[in-house]
Image: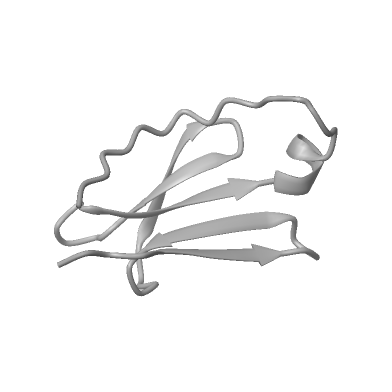
Length: 75
């Protein structure tokens, strides 16, 4: 079953939320300053990512930022 990435940005909170498939309850674990992975509390499967201070971090055009997330995509 292919899962879509669902992006949601809260401008007021400056938070980018990326869900793998339909958003669901999860526990968050900070892996780098302001970067979190979201895991299913029962299976520990990664179900999404959250980046705090997203706009502040990326607002300078042309400035590259590394996010410590690796992914495998397949057809």
